[in-house]
Length: 119
Image (cartoon, rainbow, N blue to C red; front, side, top):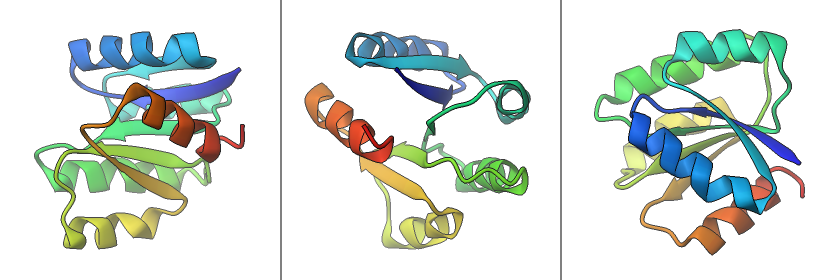
């Protein structure tokens, strides 16, 4: 089973992604902020980290920098509705990183996550 650390401040968005991915061989551990995520990374092993693009790109950049500063090279998946070329370029500093543009089908999302996780 592939393990995903989901960092999502919105309760309903966290529950929705958990419910969407769980039947497809993903074990999702969700947290609402970067502090909780960093604590989980200290005590558990994950195949990937998933988060969504926030209104404030600075907050997302701070989150990604905090994750990479721990020394982790776990792939990060960012879900976004409107990634600009500038945003994609800024995010590319945090390799390995994948931007998945919403809307997407569940089948497409699951297939891409399987590829990223090596499954």
